[in-house]
Length: 115
Length: 115
Image (cartoon, rainbow over all chains, first blue to last red):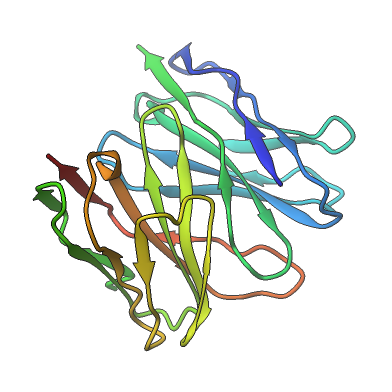
C-alpha cells in the first residue's frame, strides 16, 4: 500500500524567503503521480502542483516547484518568495497512474509566514 | 461555475442517528470520492466511484455507505452515527485519465459532529 510521510508538523518562514516542505512516499507502483494541495484556514482544498513519475523535469507552477528525487522517493515542495497568504496547511499526496484518482494523503505541514 | 457542491456544510447528530451527506458535481467527471479529515491525520479515503453503478471501498469504509445512480451525484450515508465519525468530510471528483493521474476537484467540506 502507498504511504506518504510529511515529517514537519509545522514550519515557519520569513516573508519573501523560500521554504521547502518535505514529502517522502512509499510505493510499489511503477507509474504514479505526486500532488501538493494547500488548505487555508477557510478549509477548502486548493491544487498546487503535480509531478508524474516519468516526468524528467521537476514540475513548476509560478512560485511553486516540486523537487522530485525518484530514487530517494521524495517530492518536496519549494515555495519561493513566501507571502503572508501562503500561511496554510500543505498536503502531499500520491495517486496511482491508472486514471483512478485515489489519492493517499500525508498528515500535512502547517506553514506560518511571518512578516 | 458550481463545481463540486456539498450539503449540508454543518450538521450535529446524536449517536445512533442516520444522515446523508450530499455531493453533486456539474463537470461530467467519471470519478467521485469521499474523504474524511481528522486533526493530524490528513485526508483518508472512505469510498470512491468510477462511474454510475460502480463503487468501491477506500481506506476507512466502515460505518459508511455510498451509491452512484447518476454521474452527477454521490451521496454518503451514515446509517448509525458514532462519535468516532465526528470529522470534516470532503467530496472530490475528477476525470479518469488513463496513464496519468488527474487533478481532484474538492467540495468545500461538511463538518459533522456526533454527540
